[in-house]
Image (cartoon, rainbow, N blue to C red; front, top):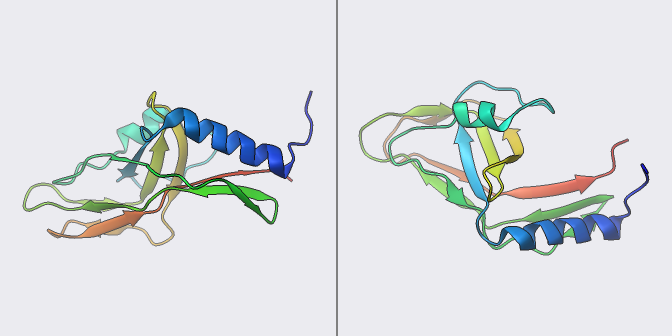
Length: 137
């Protein structure tokens, strides 16, 4: 059956998914000039992953209870900050991705202002993880 999923059901789905993850989902950054679409794979996102000095994926934690605004169910986690360490490799960053606890790609987003410079020691890149469910028009 292909039917409509109502706002309440979208919120329930988001809350159920996030409750099953706990604080184990991870945010990563990608350094390749990707323009992600529905065909992007986990392997492609990981192959493009950043490797600047001090980089490591970070936990997406403390997700909010899902809320619906304008027909879009949304939840957000605490912001995470990536900081370029001293010396070593630097990268230009094109966006961020979200992996579930099993390491599967859940979402990927290209930054609206690319590339972002992570070649200077102490440079920071802040990501506020958001997860949305909406009806497709």
